[in-house]
Image (cartoon, rainbow, N blue to C red):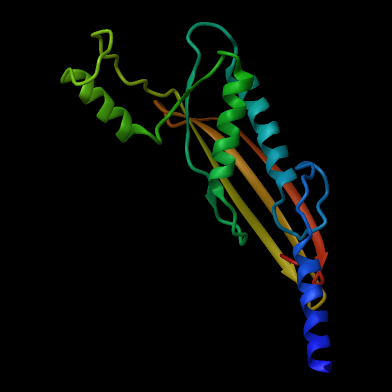
Length: 193
């Protein structure tokens, strides 16, 4: 009888635990699970600042819009992050906010683009009969994440620098560079670092 009652109590706890539902939260707001790492609000703040600065630096509106290739972000920090989230979000922000003052060139799909061009040239797919040249780029947008960490047996501190730069594709001169810095401290009771 005691064993059956104990099993029933455990089963009720399991069922009660399964009834918890996820809820939507503001990606810019504080999280109930935080550490000293890079949070969604940090990523969104970096992307907003950098895309605005890039449009200001390049988007004069005179003549042909500068063409930019967004390169993958490199992660040299201690944090396991999805670098593609920066690339995806900054590309989206630039396309949305530049309003024709910049042109983003897609280098990630070059194999598919070349295959499509070849099919057009062979007449395998229809088009207007004119195969356009591939767009070259004026600038390469590079990004990197770096961090410095310090810890004791009771706390952790992380200083993170997220930096982007535009390099002129002809001259290799860095035309623009900016960084976003943050420093976070947390106790070891925090769920993740």
